[in-house]
Length: 339
Image (tube, rainbow, N blue to C red; front, side, top):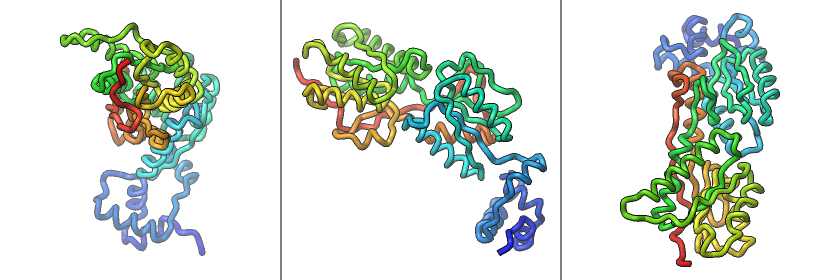
């Protein structure tokens, strides 16, 4: 069967090729009724626009580039999947590249995407982004790890952690340990500030609530093994001194901490409550099921794509769009036992 072209679509729809082109480019001048009718014909005929021809005519490439630090991280994997779905809803495809959390590789990936004439780039910067210089003239939206001087979209990490600490306080916990992320990470520092904010506020409560001892903090990478090591560190103390609850900065850390508690014979949540952060699908697969503060990953990805495609106003510089987090209650948090 010969390849279907735009003329065949236009002829069957009874419209001009220009009208079909405007519909393919999501132009607002086309009525919803006509758009639906022509789109149905395009689908029935199996018409596929030629992206190289469109590029040669100076049109958009209908490609969005995505640069992330680590594709093996479940958070970034879900972010990419959500962005791909959001892009597809607008008739766009994505190209994903990994920087391996290295600024030089990151600059190279951005250069490659620019040479491929992508219409915009969604960037999760490396942790050493301070050396990165982004190209001018290409729409770029920074996601998750916010960079001063650039439009950014992220979860409200700081208030998300405060929400989690308040959940533990309401259950009656007063010795709340915290596994922070790496010190050079922007989200990790925001989450740590949220923890310290909530602990300080609890100390100053008018009802006399007393927090037991200084904050219990262990710094760790966001992965499982680091969470396990941090959990061992926080739990390696007398029962009346160790935390009755541990809030981890990522779900992977929290799951590692659960393993540490299991190895030490500390039952969850009877003797230890554990709370994670991110809301990745894996959190619902643990036994017991992990309670976590969920980032609205789909909303973040959809907003980033919308900004790149001029479907949504870009956030002002140094005034990012922050999405609220929510608690997904599982089975790993409960009121503490008496010492």
